Length: 211
Image 1 (cartoon, rainbow, N blue to C red):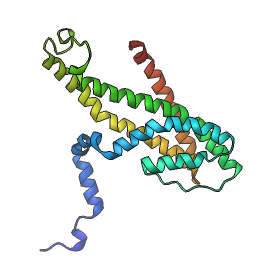
Image 2 (spheres, rainbow, N blue to C red; image 1 turned 30 degrees about the vertical axis):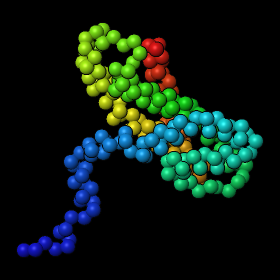
Image 3 (cartoon, rainbow, N blue to C red; image 1 turned 90 degrees about the vertical axis):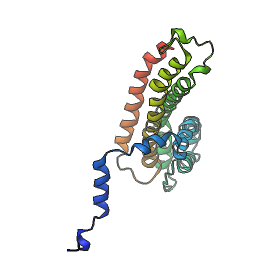
Image 4 (cartoon, rainbow, N blue to C red; image 1 turned 180 degrees about the vertical axis):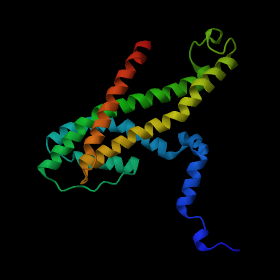
């Protein structure tokens, strides 16, 4: 007996079926090579200097909010409608510049460090003065390269795009909350941003001591 239209699988059923199968590993493998990943990383590169520049601009009542919304729109695809220009919106633009600076600094530092680990491990044979006989996987260069590339380079290559995505997600929420018309969840986003910056700063101390 032929099934009815009601028996046909709907879009929600397809979504549940994909979720039941687990994550899309092909998407995970492709993520480091997607244009969106590098646009997000470009945002991390620019967010810190632009945010610092916006501090004096906001203090004198300049278009700091418009600059920040434009950066988020061009690199993150985040569309935020501009609120009317009032004293309150100027103060919110200043608050955004102040709150975002520590997050932007940590985001750039962490993502830059992760990409450095990728390059150093995948390009292990190019390290100046490297002695494979004393390295993990030695004494041959092929063995040392395999251990460093597979054990260090590849995992960081796959993880770093998702770390970047997490940072830019918080940055986008701050832009929407401070520089848009919708303040829903703004305090929560500020708490997450500052907590994330503090935790990453504390975790970076042992890394700095090893340099």
